[in-house]
Length: 242
Image (cartoon, rainbow, N blue to C red):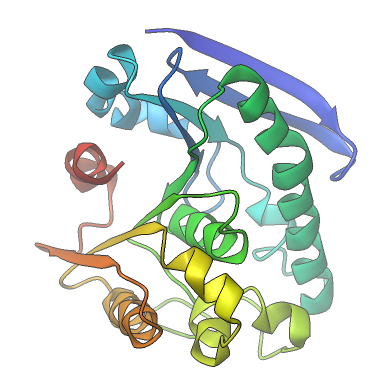
């Protein structure tokens, strides 16, 4: 399997950033790591191996980006407004640095965003915000409003709320989305959600799916056994949806 390691100093984040590329062609997939995880974890957990037949056949090319969650949503040493600002810097890094790399290495007109757990949030939120860039998004075991407190998970912004928070929580901004151009673009996107039947995030997945349907946006929402919130299940789920 073709494997490439890339590292450069990000002007948007003012730090070195790393990523891995698997495959030589096909539909590119921007794959986000789980909560506070690293760009190499999906390889170590066997998830890349579970996609090997698609990668080696040239069906997909996977770009595993790094996370800065410890500097944004999980950085309790700074005020929540600083956390969301850091997240938006990460978004600019993706749009202005990673996406151009993908386009340089892959001439496909398609681009998917995918992720597991916190990575599902990043993937779905980015794709829904920029539907002209993405034609598909896959969120597995995802959480789509980081200000909620499902199960033992806490509000990552400690009750803080402003416009920037609102426009980065999919279940919040989708409810009031009425822009016909944006809605038409979203209606052309393939949207797949998958979550375990006992996962605390199940209600958020069902809510997001229902909101999409209310706006006339087709989507799939699959429920798996148990909580399905660990690599054992993700290795099985990845080939179905990515």
